[in-house]
Each structure stands twice: as structure tokens, then as C-alpha cells.
Image (tube, rainbow, N blue to C red; front, top):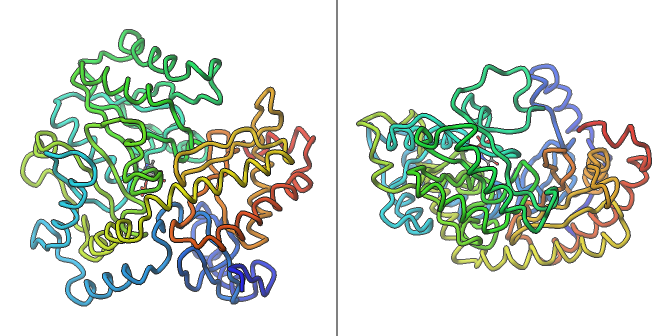
Length: 454
Ligand SMILES: Cc1ncc(COP(=O)(O)O)c(C=O)c1O
């Protein structure tokens, strides 16, 4: 039997009833992307309240890298919850936190490093900035166009896209300077995208911000929300080189790209890029709220006693889940699996591109694959309405997909790496069919519909 089995229209009656209740009592900005209410998940499969089985190619927005309800995660969580579920680590410490810190220092290449744990990606970014400011004694931060770093005041200030993330929420945090990222597909000179972005970066030290005041540069080695944009290695390595000369710390935001998504534990490794500090979250604890900042001891020890923390940081149950995730990645060869999944996804989209002219670019590293859609391959005019139509078509056929991109025109694949070959093929077949069907439902050729939603 296949993975996908739809026994009702979506939403089915039981999901619809919960969604109605939700609309009455849950705030509207927490809107719903897939019209199904989940009952349970296993691996890459989810089952809703009406008994519909779907594949989740969003992996809970990147968190379920080892799959829903991995038995070893479930076992670790149950065991830990029965022992102790909370103390506040800085009042009474516990071993799973220390074990995870050891695991992360070993895996992130920050050999003389130390770790601090938090709850969300945004909270870890906030704290990475606190460490960097404390260690350097400098206030300013540099981030990039297209970057996404979370929804807290500082995370939002560092984030690039106005709608939906910033509009109406200002004023934003000061001393945040945003510079161009290297985005080859949309560069005036794709082959020189890295060099052009580095030039702009160096120029900014004359025209935008005094480098002597800059504490840190925050960069996603592959942009997630910004469109699965893969920069040339020279851009990332060049940033590090320029910043090292000027005493600026380079923080890699690997919240989405890290923990094995790209075929190495960190995406940074794929580029020979060695950031000073790394931020992880999402897949780290298979959806339990947990994030980490890893950096050199001199930076991580800079703030004074009790200057870093939080009631829930590094919750023991979440740490137990994360320790299980690290073991699963090793034991099940998920880094190699990431390569295979990515190759299969890219190959399928290459075939689709022959039939679907809206496919502008297929890009990615390992299983972090994005497909950018355009109304015209020559002008590269973004096609956000096509992406919306495509996602509706995949979901109605039983595959949950999510989009991204500054123009909201990129399909991102965040497939659980434990997916079987058969389930992967079945899901990709749905994507291929949906890509053709979406041409009809998006009303291709209708200019108004192409700009709507951008
Ligand atoms: C690169 C990146 N940084 C930070 C965040 C914020 O993480 P969280 O939603 O856990 O606060 C995200 C979330 O999508 C992200 O993709």
C-alpha cells in the first residue's frame, strides 16, 4: 500500500470541526497552511483526524529530519520525562544538557568551544548577539538581504522581508545594517555574484558602518526562508577572511540548514566556511523546543555570571530528544541519505522542468533543495501565484509542501531523511503531477494573478 491515502476531501469533517473551533479562539495571524488536523505521524507520513494519510515534505518546517515519532526519540523522551522534566539548569543541573554540549562541540568543529542552550531559533540568535557584543565590546550587527533570523524584536530587526514579518511591528532594534547577499540566479552577473556581494560588503565599511563598531555578522550559509539561496563558497569564505582581519565575529545561522540537512552536520562545511559561532535549532531535537549557540570559549565565557539563561533553556526532555537525534544521524547514516534524497529530488525536478516552463532554477545542497518559479525564464519575473497554486495542488493530492523566497516563489523541500525510497518516489510523482496541474489553476498568462501574493 502507498503512503498516501485520502478517504475524505480535505479537510475531512473531523478536521473541519476543529478548524472551526480554532477560528473562534486562536488568533488569525496563526493561519493554517494545510487544511488537515494531525492525529499522529510516523517517519515522513502523517495521519489526520479523519484517517487521511499524507506525506509531509515540510517535516514540520524542517524539524522532523529524523522523521515523526522516531522510536529512539520517543523512548528517550519518555524515559527522561519519567525521571525529571524540568529544574532550571542553572539552579539544579542535569547530565543530558552536558552530554548534548559535548556532542555539539565535537560536531561543529569549534574545538575549543563551549555551548549554551535555549528554546527557539530566535532566542538563540538573540543570545549569540549578546555573546558577541559582550566579547567584542561593540554594538553593531551586519545581516543580509533575504535573511531570516526569527520573530523576536532583534530577530525581526535582523530579518529582511517586510511582509509578513515586519510591517506594522516597528520600531526595530538599532545598530542593524543589512547588505546584499550573493544570490547567483538574481545577480546581474551570476558568475561574479560572490565577488559583487563581497565588494558591497567592504564598501559598507566606508559608507554604512565603521567596522570598528561591528560585533558580528549574522549569515545563513544557505538562506532558508529567503529562498534556499546557495551562495558561492568564495562569498562565505571571503566574509570570514574580511571579518577576521577586523575583529568581527562571524555567526552562522544554521537553524534551518544545520543538523545534517545538507549532507554534512553543518551546511558551512560544504563551503569550507569556518564561522566563529554557530546557531542551531529546528531539527536538533526533532521538534522539541531546543536551540544552541556554539562558539569559542573566549566568546562564550565573556558575559558575567548569570548574564545568560532563562527558566526553560535546555529543557531535559528536549536535550534527551536531541541526544537521540545525534545518535540516529550517525547510526542510520542520515548524512549520506541526505545526499541521495537530494539527488533524487533534483533529478525529478529536472524532468518536470522539461514540461513546465515556470521552473526557473533547481538549486540546493544535499537534501536542502529549492525550486524557484518564474513567469518567464528570460526576465526571471517571479511567479508567486504559480507557487501558491502548486502547493494547493500537492496538498490536495496528499503531499504537504511549503514555500519560501523573498518573492514567495520558491518551493522548499525539507523531506524527513528517514523516508523510504518508495515513499519518496510516490511524493515526487505527486509533485510532478501537481506542477502540471498548477499551470491551469494558476491561470498562467494572467499577469494580475502572477503578482498577487508577492
Ligand atoms: C535561519 C533561521 N533562523 C532563525 C529562525 C527562527 O527560529 P524559531 O522559529 O525557532 O525562532 C528560523 C526559523 O525558520 C530560521 O530558518
